[in-house]
Amino acid sequence: MSSGTPTSSVSPSESSYDRTRMRQWARGRARSAGIDRRDLLKLVAAASVAAPLVPAAASPAHAAQSLAGVVKPLPPELFTVRGTNAETNFSALRDTGLLTPADRFFVRNHTATPVVDATDWTLTVWGDGLAGGPVDFSYEALRALPAVTRTAFVECAGNGRSFFTSQQGQQVGGTAWTLGAIGTARWRGVRLAEVLRRAGIGGHAVDVLPRGLDAEVVSDGTNLGRVRRPLPVAKALDDVLLAYEMNGEPLPPDHGAPVRLIVPSWVGIANIKWVGDIEVSAEPLLSPWNTGLYRLFGPGYPAEGSAPLARQTLKSAFELAPGASFAAHRRHLLTGRSWSGGAPVRSVEVSTDGGTRWRPARLRDESRPGSWVRWSTDWVPRETGPGVLLARATDRSGRSQPATTAHNTQGYLFDAVVRHPVTVV
Ligand SMILES: Nc1nc2c(c(=O)[nH]1)N[C@H]1C(S)=C(S)[C@@H](COP(=O)(O)O)O[C@H]1N2
Ligand SMILES: [Mo]
Image 1: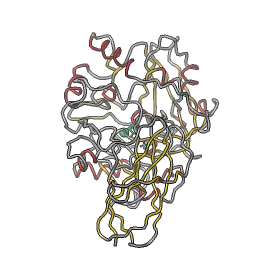
Image 2: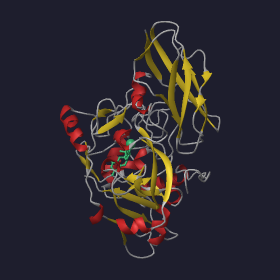
Image 3: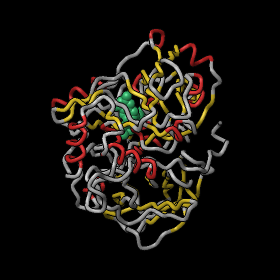
Image 4: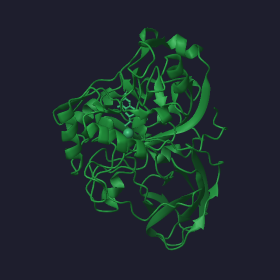
């Protein structure tokens, strides 16, 4: 598997499997992994109203800690700090290539970056989905297994969330990202499938639950335990990596050192950082991150929420600061990026008149699954004053970014066209 090799077109969609998982849970047959069943039910109930569940909605005390929780510097020209997280300023990507340098890559931490020494780290694979007992892998042992590299974005499920409020007037809970909760890197590591096979995964295994070594997450007084999210075996054995390098360097602490999961095209939460153990289960598993969190709740969705989020959606962003100014009657090069977790991007159109007329942008990269494409177009603004730029991508299945996104209480998967304010002087 390299970034040049097309991935399997079979989508291990969770929705049909999840119906079974939820039915089994209702009958007490799926297991709540590491959390009380009643606490999970409370989370699901809370998710159906628009209350902030993601513990990053910053109080001032939180904001001060957040800087301490991230190891790398967060200069304000590159990042906007939001609670325990750092959003990449899209304007800071203009002079970068396809890959996002680690020093500009967004950080999404539920708590804080733990500093884990690779030499005393082991990955334990365990559970009743294995043929035998637990199997440990040292860092050295993982590095000795066949390596693969792959270019993939990691994007938070809530990327673009703030536009539910600023463009659609809707209340949503969670970190108020604009479009910079995404980065693309070249990851090197070992296939999760390779590790699971060596650990003796059985044909009866259904879920794989990687868990981070960062602190337990406490939300609204409930201890949710350590960050963990079940992956169906079909995805785990498909294109998932246990990555130890990012853009040719050892993984930096903030991005999951010594080893993290890379789950191409899926929502950011699937990409568990600082992975310490992986449970392989013969029963369906539930954690807060696939029940109350990371499902769609709201008027258009069932009371127990949608199926757990899997693939990312279609988005576009200009590599510009909000409110950027342009000299009238001069030629400017507008640049940006578009990406999709579904079919790759086929074309991008730009409007410089608020959405009346659209013209095609030039694509600067070959579109590949799980990555993004850079694009550009020229603009000679004629009238001075405030203006709005829009970019709209269409994917190879023919789907285009819509004018609005249906509301969900936690503001996930915003895919509507974003209005980018500018000033012409
Ligand atoms: N252990 C652990 N893994 C985690 C998280 C976390 O807080 N702890 N955050 C998740 C979320 S919500 C996202 S969007 C991505 C962010 O990856 P990055 O910080 O490398 O950009 O990591 C995921 N993996
Ligand atoms: Mo995320």
